[in-house]
Image (cartoon, rainbow, N blue to C red; front, top):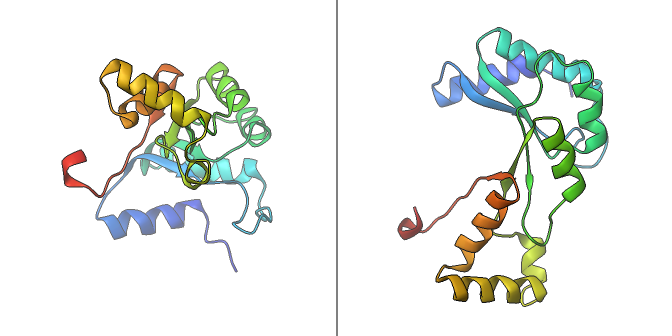
Length: 168
């Protein structure tokens, strides 16, 4: 499959959404879903992403699910540093080394699935759930509120979703 390039993909997304620019454009995991690496280097992909800022197509650029080794490759020569690394983060998947590295380099870790995920579903009823339930009860909050606060207090931004109108 031919690679259309970061700008072409971005422009297609903007057109599909009826927008002229993105506030934040993310370059997702630096490997294919089957685990094989991209054909381009991370530095080449990042230079293309920097071009989005230059062209006014994105106000900021970031990454999603990047490891420390991936970030090191890009940050070393980047003109525009990633503003965030969006990744799964909750008490069952804390990733403290990655969080610390990002914080030391001015990259906000943004947690998706801050309330847990399939990983947590498989561990339901485990020790973390007991602690969260106890804290929630003691503080008069819901377990969800406790988990959101945990992410914020540990220096992460959070992204939440819901299909329930009462939670919007």
